[in-house]
Amino acid sequence: MDNKVLTNFRDHPSLRYDDPQSVFKIDDKVYLISEDVVRQILPAHIAHTNIGEPYAKLVRLYFLFAGDNTVKLEYSHEECIDFAPEHEEALRELLC
Image 1 (tube, helix red, strand yellow):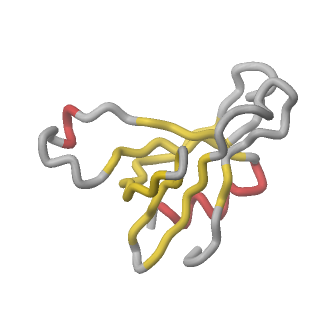
Image 2 (tube, rainbow, N blue to C red):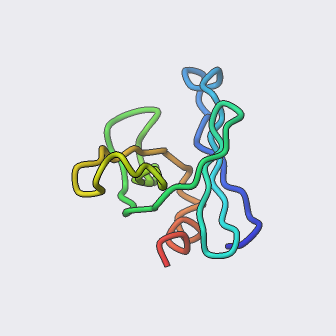
């Protein structure tokens, strides 16, 4: 998945003004671009959503922010981003 940028799901009228969030992988490290800030993340797992429109059948990537030495990983709060179903295979590659 190197050099492929995946952008979060925003293809619904209620989400069109949400900030775009993108993930990409370089040299086995995964990064998140959010609000014009790039941060390394540690992908944890993915899951399917089914919580009603517009979130039905999306793929949710759960992750932790990397490099936060002040918090032990086992106590860190997982973050998540929703992606369109066609990105599932590429998201699974992030976990490898």
